[in-house]
Length: 392
Ligand SMILES: Cc1ncc(COP(=O)(O)O)c(C=O)c1O
Image (cartoon, rainbow, N blue to C red; front, side):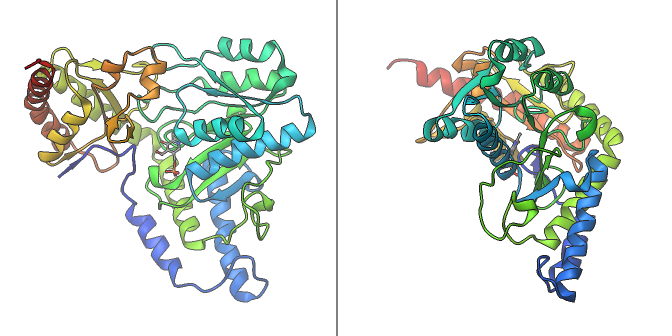
């Protein structure tokens, strides 16, 4: 079996499994005042310090959450509510057109249900948001903007955004800037303080940590209104009993991923380059999407003209190779990815794509298996599509 879908989720590292297991049997709620509770609290606070150290924030700025989706929701809804309460003119939420649904959908929901104005920042054909575009969107009426959200790196095509430059533009206008760094931590130099962003999303299961643990880094002075109400944990930003085992595992994963980043990114880029070379030899008209000068090292997003991505995925699956198309499915019909459409691709091209994503355990043998399988799979997918399109 060959796994080329590490951007969807990747193996939990053995060190993390050991840490989570060591903690699972421990008794105590971190909010309790007695010795059991204090022990659990110590585990959580150590995890907070390790996450802060690895990501360039202070421990106080780390808000633990259940993962990327939750962090994005708190950032977008919570910052909107806080800023709009201070000044009701602040109704605009500016998000890039290529955000993950975890950021796009809360912004849209706020427009549908909370009186916000949802505005997308367009991207170029490589998937980049230009600082000039953001400046134009802000300059006309900065007093009407609640927040800006642009991801650090895209989960489908891997394009890395000029986050520090974009954050600097938002800061000039005094507008909070959130970034979803779920795909970036461990492969890009993510430093919260140095980047100048106001809030940053992290998810454990994309970097060798457990599913169900993540964090939102929130700069001092920003108080997102809570989405969940309850026991007031995490400075009242995220109520809910904290999980010492998962948070210890998250901290170990983040620490290891950040510590090994350069070496790991090189390992991924070498494999990715070999993969793309091999695929190009097998399928001469393959198109590589995204910004080839500035993209994540572990993601290769490829379009195969004349094929349906879904058919390719199933043909590769039958050969024991797991990958992704990136396109969503609605009522059983594949929908073109909003990311590819925003980059100017037509629906056919968008639907002809595969995302192959590499991880820590990927090997040259995985790449060789994909390269051997892709030519015949493309031929079959093209034949099937041509047959379907020929009128009887
Ligand atoms: C860029 C990005 N943001 C957010 C998420 C959601 O994270 P989680 O699965 O931890 O909720 C993902 C996961 O696919 C992602 O790739």
